Amino acid sequence: MQVTTLSFDNLHAHGPLFADLLRARHRTFIEQAKWDLPAADGMEFDQYDTPASRWVAVHEGGCILAGVRLTPTTHRCGIYSYMIRDAQLGLLSTIPPNLLFQEAPVDPKIWESSRVFVSHDVPASKRLRVQMQLISEMVQAGRALGATSVLGLIPANSPRLARRVGLDCIPAGPVLDIGGSMSVAVNISMATKVH
Image 1 (cartoon, rainbow, N blue to C red):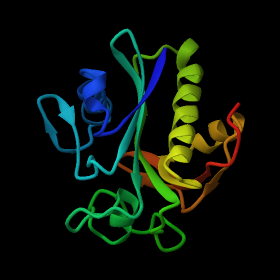
Image 2: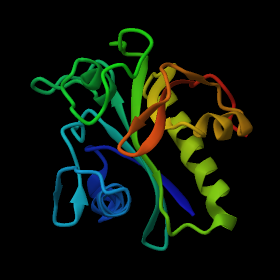
Image 3: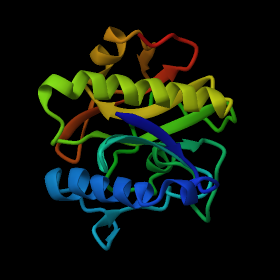
């Protein structure tokens, strides 16, 4: 099992890994979760997949097992900044604007995690190991980018997993039904040691 953090600077060194990650997102979010998201050539993408973002991919034997996108909360592209802030500002009709207890941060030390997934093809016996690899690399990548915390929108039951692996994960908003699944915004400290 390998874990790679992709950026526009290193995509060329990883062959089809980025396209494979977007195809895995398509399977996860469009085919399985039935979300209405942009797609082309079997790949899911949106306005937040820009050169400012980074993508963590857990992969093995040419298959994407899991992934997450990291975007700086200071980034702007046209009218968009980052998903959670744009939802709070009412720019996204699919995410309720009341997802945070306070105003969405714009801070170079805070990054957003989004499009977090573990492939449905990952067997239960391997799932925790894949999740651990994804979380560990997300923390390492976040730290390397200068982040002290990550703001994410995750399944409502995920904070239990985070605590189990030693991640400091604090709810930043109420539990909401988003796209048919119960989700919660959380602040994740990059200072903690992942088990």
